[in-house]
Length: 376
Image 1: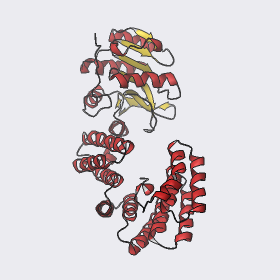
Image 2: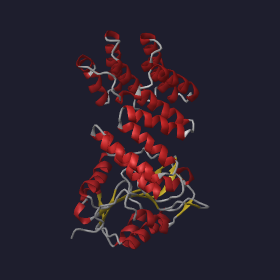
Image 3: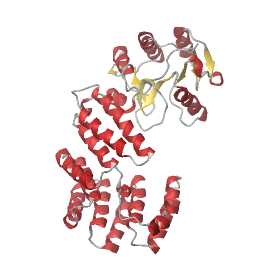
């Protein structure tokens, strides 16, 4: 939870002007230039706490925990053992996994200023990381009481969700969405709301009790056709037959099968089973309710993003891939996947169409709200 720079640290107009360029560079993704700009401001305006915080946040977001700790130590050198630099130090130690030291630094900060919301938030994060959810929730309640902030509510929601308290978690995420100060924060909170509803689909089990495929659906909204352990990895034919069965049982109708990537023999089987023509990517027709198919996601291919983006933009059709890497952070655009892979190797799994059908009908599935029949 990277929130250090999100808190109100006595901003004033001169400080806003001094760090405006660094902020712009950070928003543009020019990380090295942004860091250089922040450090330049610190060299001339070392009393600007907002600049220390935002430079720290930049390093933290880039997973440069050692550099973040050195920056925090620089803040201690400038401000002394005061609450703000001690909080930065504690936050850096959290990212390094040195949780006991982090708690000690944050407790020192709060001894000096018990009303510093940022320190309470980071204390909550540290307690969460060491497996003390009760202490974490108490700290976050204190942080939110001092300074209502969407990131504090998001962290509270994650803790409650991990405990299987899905309804309470959803309330926290809804509060985070309402408290959001900009679109990105709101989108993140809304994503967590949908994920929580999908996790609740498996109640009373907690997230840690779910299988990898169940957790995948809960986190992404993508349906996995082959989730059950099996003796061998599923073949292309087995995955296509499973997709056809789910399609039939769901009442989906596709007007065309749009092939992205290599043309596999199994796509002809799929097109015949759907009674839909197989076409090249250039023949995409959103009105026909297209089914985009590929062996696996192709995020490096601009045509892939165009195809998957058209499905979302027109709210019509699906994207089906035979296999998908297990990293949920991969931006794939897929809606239904055959089987998860470890590296480039398919897991040994068997299709479970009844389970896939239940997930596909969930109101928070990735493709909920799309038209899944041709418009004409």
